[in-house]
Image (cartoon, rainbow, N blue to C red; front, side, top):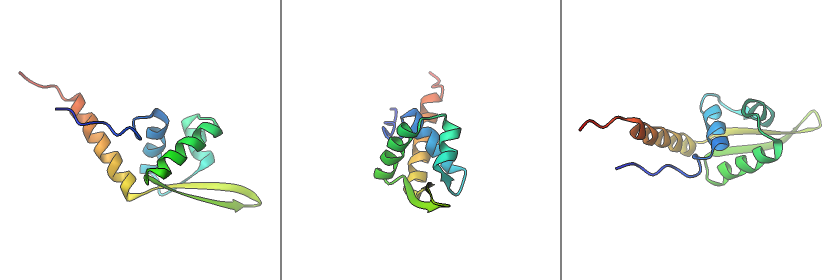
Length: 97
């Protein structure tokens, strides 16, 4: 009756990252860290999990001699997020007898 929730997106921090990226073209690591109030280490691990799942693309480069990481949601990530939200909506619907 209930759809299975995507275990990748069911993590609070990974869901927060995807939710941020769904509304913007791309976001820098520091922006995501600030918005999610995450530690750099934990955020790095969760970004890698999303990247491994194909939900985001990650570009690492140097900007003014400092490392800069930029994340962008993929079409697979958008589809996974939409499926996840639809599944959650099914959980929230009140079934009439």
